[in-house]
Length: 222
Length: 222
Image 1: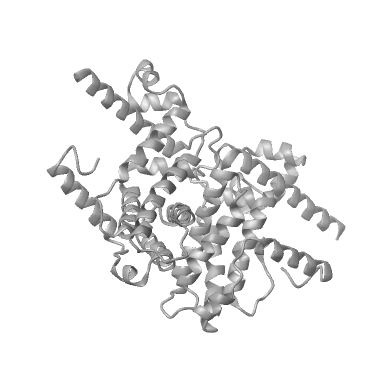
Image 2 (image 1 turned 90 degrees about the vertical axis):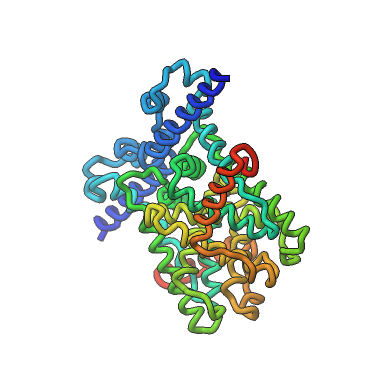
């Protein structure tokens, strides 16, 4: 058990180092040597967990995908909004999330399949939209697969613009504005009027999750 | 005059080579040596036009900004839609446009100010939205500067997602779907019903511009 704990910690240390190096250098310029140096682990330990630079990048991409499980909401469109607003909040504060997003957006990352995060996120959004549809929250013309892709693609661009113009300082405002532009095209008016798409929402959801985690370390969220 | 023509042609050759190299390598990994080699011009000629790699990148970014002047439309929201749909069409076919977009989206382009294209595009959209507002095309709550940023940021992301999942094969469809999600939040219903946001629209606008250019080489579309 202790051995397994140590392996999990080492894997985590390596991924954090990889996230840092990928974020600073980009996928192409990053080297395993620099990740090794940053992580302070042995070559053997690194290759035990990851066989290649691509596997390290996929590890980071996978890690950021895992971090956005939020509590169930009665209103599924609110749940979708919460996922997006929380993601914006964490992008500002969590290097692993930032590295994952940058890898997905790195149009020069040759040999790295970047479609994964887009498609995984799209599947997550689609599932929430299908639940919303079953509950009568969506306008009749909405095609859930199309709207899911629009939500994922548009957020990707808004974060990129925010990074370029303000180093993410204005990301929470921009994300709220994005949702205010998209949701009137998908939500029935009574649901739309009940949604919280505001700028501070992402942080509030984050704190809600922290409180839940403190009460039930193993379950609830994950 | 002949001398000036030659200088313009040389500048153009260099920019096309730079576009190709930036698109293939990314900003960071691109070198002036490779751009020189691709362009087949002398070092002197290149440095006469561009002093640094950053100036070359700014040249490419500026060049793609220039390529989207479209004919005046009575309906300004249609004009905005046409700019976006035409851009999607040209992204599929024009290496200079593709290189410009990739540079703007390159989150690892250290030392390159990427905010320029976002801000210039946003200013162009805002101007069109202000005209639309003056003509009563917009819903009363629309803040033109906010909506302009949303249009620019969301399109940036949709193109990035399209590149990641299909190498731009599905970009026209995705762009049409994006506009169908955004415009209901900004257009009054009577205008919305009159808009052409369809997938083939970008190509039709492109051909319209080609016809105009053939008739009036110097004016009309400058």
